[in-house]
Length: 293
Image (cartoon, rainbow, N blue to C red; front, side):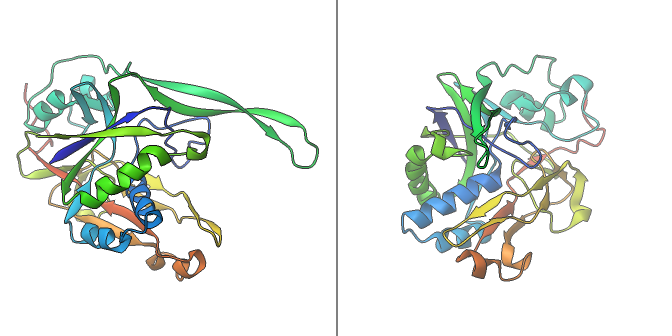
């Protein structure tokens, strides 16, 4: 397993259903990351279909992007109601805290120190096309201090992924790239996570193929836009299990062909559109009341 660290040279914006321009997420979800990689491969005339097939066959898989600062990695807090109160209130845990929790131990109480990332509100002016009246709105984004950024985990064959990232370094990742947001440099490091047990936590968005496998989860609605030279269409809404959801059994998730959701969508758009709902799992001890002091 490897960690690919994204050092952002400009602020980055990550949107989500219901957030609007005034709010920005602190992460980049695995479906957004997958879509950016495939889009980059298409623009570079690489074989994007080969990459999609590799994803379907689990020859390569990626997590969502999470914060890091220097050598400190943060991971999503597992969605267990049995975690202590001082743990449940956090969105992220350090790698050390995460490893302790999934081993059945209680991490010591500490602050969720994310002062290396700062939310910015950038004022923008909109002009009415008819009256030319102006109005101010605010665009929210996140800036990272030096030595910090977002990272994601990858398993498997990552050559094509690296090719896409080299393109995206200058193109940008996330929203409002045409405004200069989301430019980065990336570095790769080995990543080891001490994980064991008979249940699983997902570090990516996951579309469950069997709901009976869910132990605890937090559903999240994903949508967005498809912009092609032929049309602009909103993606259908899809409900997935968010990062930190816990499964009783191994759950592979699913790579969604949007033609199966909305018939003949690829005919209107001009190409196949996929949404990544495959899982990135790590093993955990059962968190159903077994966490011990």
